[in-house]
Structure formats: structure tokens, C-alpha cells
Image (cartoon, rainbow, N blue to C red; front, side):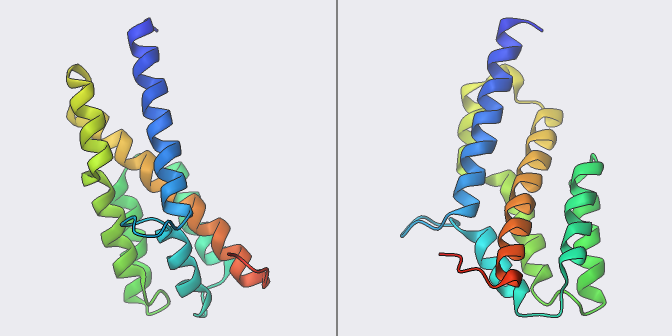
Length: 146
């Protein structure tokens, strides 16, 4: 791997980690911050079980397609078990259009191909879901999560 490829990969991982923190931790006035925590709280008020959400996380890490993740969520919504799942699917779809993602690819124009966009979107969905599951488990366990 060339040093240029290594630099790109490190910047990509840094972006995913920073956006993961953004999804997990609410900040006053920051649009979209704490979204994973908000969804976890909403899901904790439903009949959804830890294993139900773990299934989503398992799928996210085993698939190479954001479409598979979205289909899984939409299928659960259709069964009535995930009342806020349609909103979750919309949020996951929009991760691809985040301003930070656009800025990242503008700073790396030679790497801004469709494959790289798809892979970054998948990684962002995985990161969001990882935080969603962690917050959900805290909510279900009754531990104060503020």
C-alpha cells in the first residue's frame, strides 16, 4: 500500500470515528448530534428486544450493501415491531450526504469514485448502528444514560 493510499485510509477512518462520536453524543445546536442515542431511547420504549437490534448490527457487519441494511429495517417496520424504523432508515440513507463526507471527498478528488462513496456510507451506517445498539442496551438495562 502506498503512502498516499495509507494517508487516505487514515483520513477516512478518522472521519468515521469523528462522525461516530457525533452520532453518539448530543451537542447543543449541532444538527444530527446524538441521533443514535435518541433512536435508542425511542426503541427502548417499544417491545423491541436486545436480540432484535443485535440482528441489525450483525447484518451491518456481514453485508457489503447499505441496501441490505435498509431492507432489513423496512421489513421490520412492515411487521410493526420497529415503530421508528422508517425514520431510522431515512437517517441512515442521508449519512451519505453529510457535509463532512462531501468535504472529505473534495479534499481527496482522486479518490472520489462511486466505490469509495459506497464503502464510506457503509462504514458510517455501521458506526451509527454500533452506537445505537450500545445506547439501546444501556436504556434497556435501566442505567442512567446522560
